[in-house]
Image (cartoon, rainbow, N blue to C red):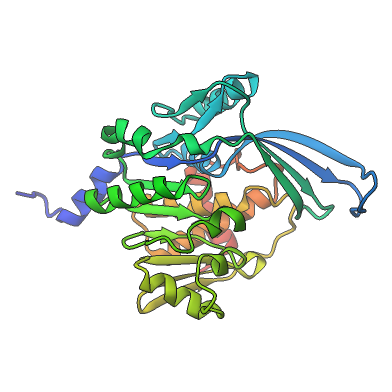
Length: 324
């Protein structure tokens, strides 16, 4: 029997606060070449370079840990110096790696070429080994997965692994979030059954490739994903903000007007903010405000992580970007 007038829903929320977010997917070394002048093709361009820890799932895990949320990361590291550095970066931030894999060979690397305004010109991905995150490996760590409050995976994982995770999340009533990452990995999921998926988070380029060619307009694409069983679609439209769609409901929110220094990791940060909001029991629109606030802060610093923010500081900044 519940005492002191505490509802069962409130009790569930309190209990979930001790459960980790489990992030599954890529961990890379990010090398970012930032052009100091307008880019020219087929010739030498002057640039500055930075090295940071990256990978969509790793970035989200790192950011959530810095915001005081318990996090487990299931990823793949090489047994090289980069892998040692990546693992130390994670554990120093408070990310646990109990079910991660260390393999023979080089760690994954993301090389981004940024325009002078901080936008992405092109990028290269090498030595990715996310195919090693198999249903068999996850099955060996099923007791850890059962402790999750949310499961997040990036689309770099295989479709078979995503299928396994979706079935697991439905069976255990644990919300599963899929982050498409970019157009090539998102395209893998065009014909995948997504019944019960809690949230998918495409941008305007990724949404069309998740859907059949007969769905040409945005609303048609959203409707198709809802018909395939996705519970919520959070569509990101860059500087125009984002919109969250579910059956019979939609919320939209404009993006803050800021000066962009570096676009790297802004999407990862946005999703980190949204998950934090959900972890704290906030409603959808409030989660979106936290998400946009964190993304705006990341866009104004170098790298993919807002290391200058605590949970308290982030939440206090929401009213700066979205005054009542």
